[in-house]
Length: 149
Image (cartoon, rainbow, N blue to C red; front, side, top):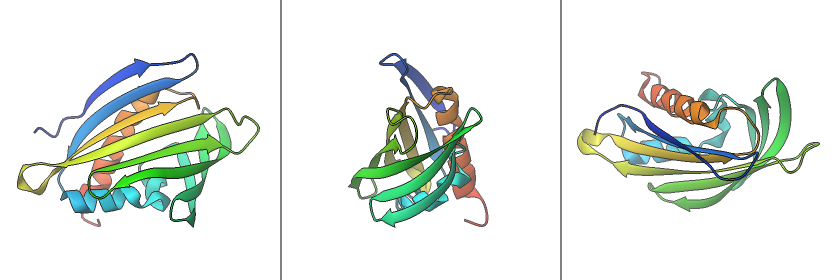
């Protein structure tokens, strides 16, 4: 499988945008899965998340910055399948509780110890979700493949 990023965009409801993309990361699936579960590190690759604080194993207080506005939100991991899939939802804690996002990321081992990462994201927070998903995956790949990792 090539290291190229593949993406697609779908719209579901007015005010809600959905997109998906896949990328191959040159790291074993166990390492990729473990790194994705480290929500406190999301600001390193999810550019809209400015900070993340663990409240318990499944819930995180996050600060989201998008289109010049910051919102506090609760990110909750709703599904974990070891080395295969992680799903979450994020709901705004602030002035507009209708804002939400939900996502699922799947991992599949590839040849030579690499991993295919497939990310699907639905959001009402605004902004170009398709471009954000692409950027998040590229940033994640760079983070995992950096010598410091």
